[in-house]
Image (cartoon, rainbow, N blue to C red; front, side, top):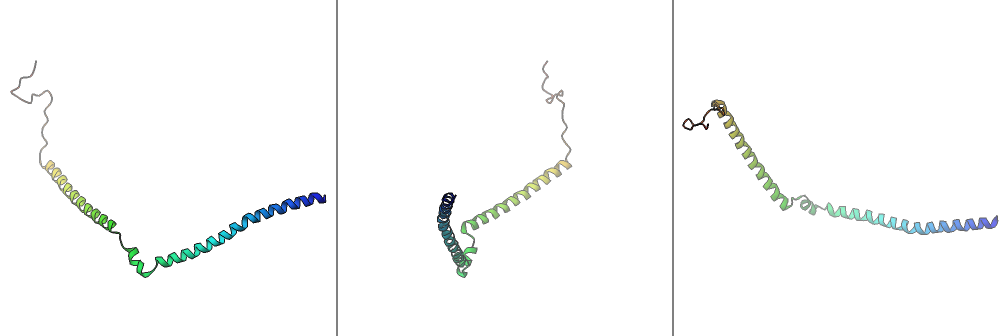
Length: 119
């Protein structure tokens, strides 16, 4: 019984020692990474919010400014075209209302009075 207990305790001790050997480097790295992460974050925030960089960060990139101008010109052109199309549509609708619709001829009627119908 004593020998079995010694063997079990020895195995348990080896298991605990193996777990500690595995966990200690991981814990040390975790603390190092967290401290570096915190210090790096603070450093980057200080760099980001410097007064001299504020205007640069808020400035619109030149290629986006050009694209915005092109888009606004396209919008104006499309609005002008829509207005003209509305005017044409209104003109067509008003001319339809003022003129009488053309009379339709039936297929049996001869459209050309000089032409003789085939037998």
